[in-house]
Amino acid sequence: MVGMFVGLMAGLVIFMGVMTGLTPYFSRKSSQFGVTLPPAYQKKPEISRYQKYFLWLNTAAGILAALPMWFFAGIKDEERMAMLVSLYTVFAILIVFIVSAAGFLTIRSRILAFKKSLPKTAFQTQKEIVVDTHFREKRLVVPNSIFIGIQLLIIVAVVAITVMNYDTIPDRIVTNWDINMQPSRTVPKHLGSVFAIPVMQLFMLAALTVANRSYQKAKQQADSRHPEISFRKNRKFRFASSLMLLIVSVATQLLFALIQTIIIFDNMERINFPLIIIIFVAVCLVLSLFVSFKYGQGGERYRLPGEKTGEADETVAHFDDDANWKFGVFYFNKQDPSLWVEKRFSIGTSLNFANWRSWVLIGLILLLPLLLTGLLMR
Image (cartoon, rainbow, N blue to C red):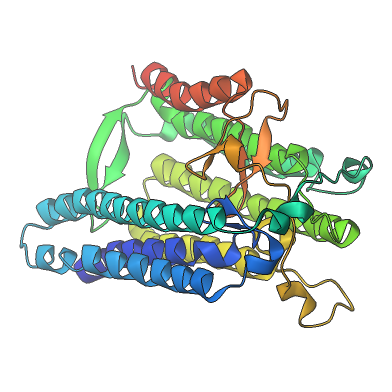
């Protein structure tokens, strides 16, 4: 169990390093490291070298940051070892993030310098904004009725099981288990502690529904030279991302439902919980990799039926709005009423931080869990 735990944490750090390093490969071709480049310069050897350098830098950072974990495996006190490995994992992830950010900003500054050296005529194709007025009339995401309904059924089932078995729940319920799946912390039984999991599930349902809605409402971005193809790919990407989010959401709700049944029936010893966690994490990672590499940001990597092999790898032309992207990552545009935009670097959606609603949303996401925890555990 000790080796498995250390291996999982080390693997997590390495995987994060590799995935972060691969980000330039599934980000939009037109914005390399947060810098918009003309189509003719998107496949220059310099850009390819920067991508490879970023991949190896992050992979090496992940491996080196994970290595010290094996020294902790020799600690005989398993509780102390698990605590140290958990704390170090957070530290290692922070190290990988710092190295990645430093590498990103360094490469970005070089690409900005490269962009300044280009002739002005190279940017003629990037002065047009293409919009499809019927874009949102077609299917973009999994309908909210399905997205919310499936998860709500799970939550209702959890609440029903909890209510029916409330009297049989021990006076002190387990909330934490050690590395060997033995109880390490208990709290008194009361409504707040017993129904903490269902309340968390409801909060997750709300947060995940907002995430799903972001794919529906995110600002359009299309190749001005081939807008119709670009819009079709973008719709495919949004639906695939929404479907992936639904699968991960249902899997997460089922995992929380399992934890609640373990709390109610106190049957952890009859369940191979570590294996379940491994399967859960593996499913989430595989789905993430699949969407990232099959579709790419905005669907640029996706090949439409009948599309020739080489066409999906062509360069693209997008409107140059670098001035609105701070550090190539944070979108800040007071003139844009959009709340959601596609990420400039990586895959998925981000917020327009010049829109006051984005800060309200961030505040709610940060404060609500703390308030709920305080109220339920009093």
